[in-house]
Amino acid sequence: MSEPAATSTGTATGTDFPPASIEAFLRFCAGEWMSLRSRFVLGAAADSGEGDEWHSSERGELVVHYLEPAAAGDPGGLNVGPKDQPARQLVFGADGRFHAGDQEGSWTLWPDGSLELVVQQGNSELRERIWFNKPNLRLRSTIEHPADGTPGRASFSSEIRRVSRPAAA
Image 1 (cartoon, rainbow, N blue to C red):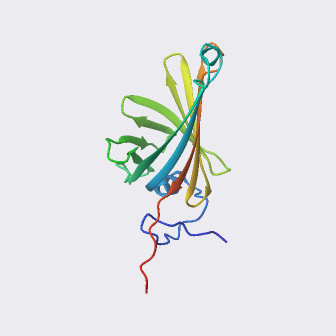
Image 2 (cartoon, rainbow, N blue to C red):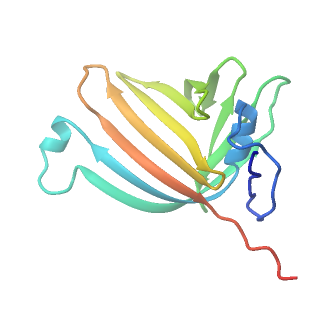
Image 3 (tube, rainbow, N blue to C red):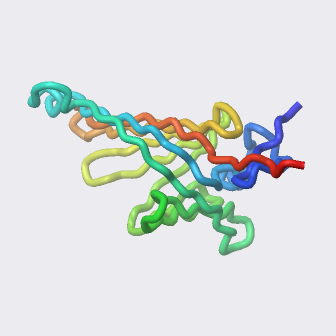
């Protein structure tokens, strides 16, 4: 039996969990999220510093809005950004491509319910994987792969959806 998702107002949406289509996945991302992100610098860049410069952690709040599709058959998009700061738009196409500002990449919704985004940035490739462990717990991992094969940067985020308590009866 699928578990209904809780929205930012604390009501059930009836959406199947985990989301099985790209449109359902994007809609499921909508909400306010408390985030804890750990960043890692790998390889030679990490070896050059002293102490704990190779690792950092930060807390934040992320706001995600679902964007209705501009064209029939497209899955829509996301407006994503830190709370009280400008957001970034990601627009997804049915062809497996997405646009985020001046960047373009590809997306894959894997059978395990995770969404993978791949972007070429100069001489490196950035891969981000997003998945839901529970309806209100989202996890993200990001790995940069430089073209020369050396380890790059990586990050891991755990994000908890903010939900409000139902009004007392």
